[in-house]
Amino acid sequence: MKRSILYFLMATFFLFGCSDSLKGMESDYTIIITGVDQLPFSGHYTIAGMGAMSKPVQVTGKGSVEYTGKGLAAACVIRKTTSEGTLRVEILRGKDVVSTAETAAPFGVITLGKIPDTTSIINQIIGKILG
Image (cartoon, rainbow, N blue to C red; front, side, top):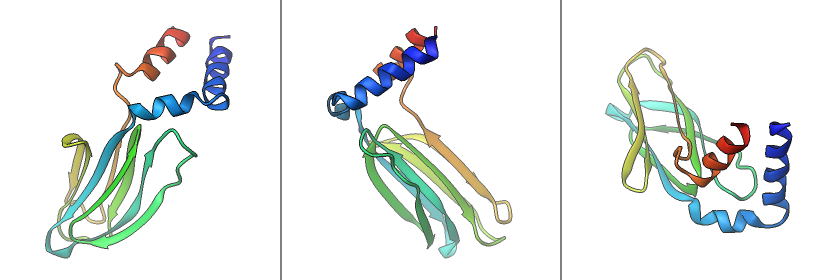
């Protein structure tokens, strides 16, 4: 029953344009990938907003790279494509680091994500509905 109410409320938000008023809740996100000595990496990232469903962006690179966007949440899966070196990935909301990890493992994988804070209005509504 509670799940049905949640789905109804979410559908109502999207069908009747309430998503436009929630766009003010979106933040600027930056995903920073750092590798020493031009360390090669590959993977994907997404910064999900209130618009259309965002698709993961495939990335391949070397060294240090930044990806930016505006949304409610950010996530990435990045892996080293070599056995050498250290790879570090950070997610920033505005200028604040909200998630970080690094790996020196051969062909290591980093999975990071940042969802809206527990104090956000979305999480409060879901919490009240689901109890």
